[in-house]
Image (cartoon, rainbow, N blue to C red; front, top):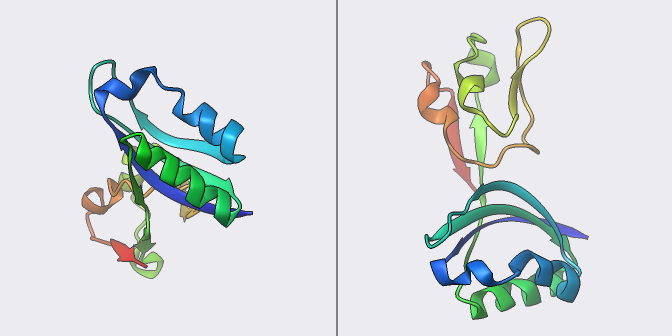
Length: 135
């Protein structure tokens, strides 16, 4: 089973379609919603982690595109310079996904599996220790 993250943007008129239902039911794709901005009558966006066979993922993404949904793969990741970090915690205040946390010893921890690459940590760090790495 392959996992891949996507940024989906969909037009206001697609609000009445059960997009995630069809991905699960018709294409056997597991969905993990990492971030959602959906408002009635407005353009919406979702950051999703999709899991399924390569073939099913291709078919599901194709179906979304046929339904006027823009699908951008998230082929980037956050790099953190841990050796220079002073563990101030500024970045944890903006990390709503929980990828950046402070442990019991007030040491910063970065869990890249939880990171949705929202990039909010980049400007929050006073030492500029976060960078975007395009794969």
